[in-house]
Image (cartoon, rainbow, N blue to C red; front, side, top):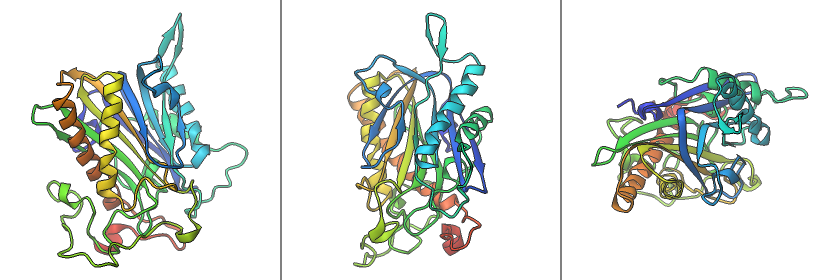
Length: 331
């Protein structure tokens, strides 16, 4: 078990980032097209090819997923991933015309202190191409790729990943980009809200506080009263080797969203753009009721772990007034 999204066979992940702008892109590339769906819970999402993933629509499978910083500018990252796939001859064949299918989503990192004066065209298309071209079975966590410029309410955000298995041996893994409106830790302390789901001290082994005070449960949000609907987002990709239909993948994404609530406080707010993509490679059969329910339960736990790992592994931006990383304060 790699404890990464790439624990699922046939999945590769690549990052690209620009330290000057303090932003980047992460590409999830599938060796073969996979069934996929999407669930949106945040009030301010930014997505690419979201309508295509609706269960009522025709295209069943996708080739990659592009996750990016840059707010709406970052939607161009999907074009870069698409361009790399096109060079490989990958895509949906329409009477000889081959079209790579690359859904994506973005998070807002435009106010993190990086230099966003990039000129006429934002760099995200090129970063998307680079991320796809460098995708492999091993990848870094923390302040990398789409998590490079991510922030939470009180600590540096980042990119995390985790993997697990159901009792029947079905594999599931998650990748999360944590740029949340709320906090991933209890109050201002070292304890992760996702502590009950931690495995082998993967995010510090601090557990939960012995008791909770009113201050710990007080709402802490990025930007305070000035928070807006486009400044925050947590993005997640859940991949399983189960054999799922598009409708079942949608249900998996819906159940997996529970992991956000186990790891972020508050979550799914009007000022968040929270999105979960779910993809299935189809290698293993699964019971459509009990099996899918357990898979969703495990996926939710895995997303919670991925969120905590992203913040635990993050490093602070080398910029004036930057938020500290978890390890700066507690590591």
